[in-house]
Image (spheres, one colour):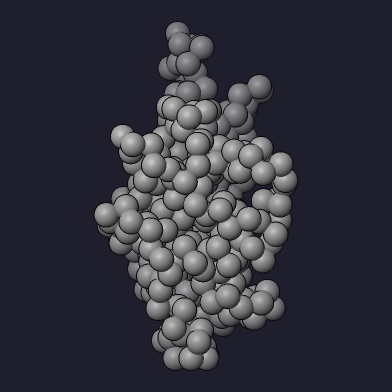
Length: 298
């Protein structure tokens, strides 16, 4: 009980630090940016991002987290931080950045499809009435430029400038989802919660944190039913033996790069003022105090 109380106190101080620091930063921008009215919101968004990264990198409390339980305690109180300052509404969402399946790991370093992962995802989408060639379309999204145009689909005939080195974001994924829906004239993709299934990391060392893996990820990795996946996602694990997988499940799990504790946060910042809005999402490496995979929508 004392340990949880201390963790809660530390978390509250962290939230207060974010709120006060960003408020001060916005006031400074408000006072200094009257000459750049058209770019004011962009400057404000930049200040907020810089302050959030600065607070995260200077937080010893974050660096001291050394277990899945410690990270869970921190996130339980600081997963959503809303506040208002200088007429701007800001919300900061924090979660584990290794709770989902990195869709870009469908291919290996040489861009060749990872046969086992592709098969697992095809089985998963078929359970939701999605034609398995959808996964082949996703493989096109990370296959690079092919001079002979030997893709699985003709999406790049329609959209020649579409990025194809990897899937960079949810918005990028939606381009391929839209192509699938229009090509097959059916909307079964709405049955899949991509928010809880996919991440879009470029980190080659990306490992799924089994202590935070979503039910959707467990279901996809093991080919199990929803109830089994929900049960597996409800626990923290000190060792893989604690998970209690049967032999078939263990074999399927070996096809994925997994771990039991990863110190990575997913940071999602939403900013709004009048008719302006911005969403900034990135991964934060707690151990090395470094942000990466930034996605801006302004």
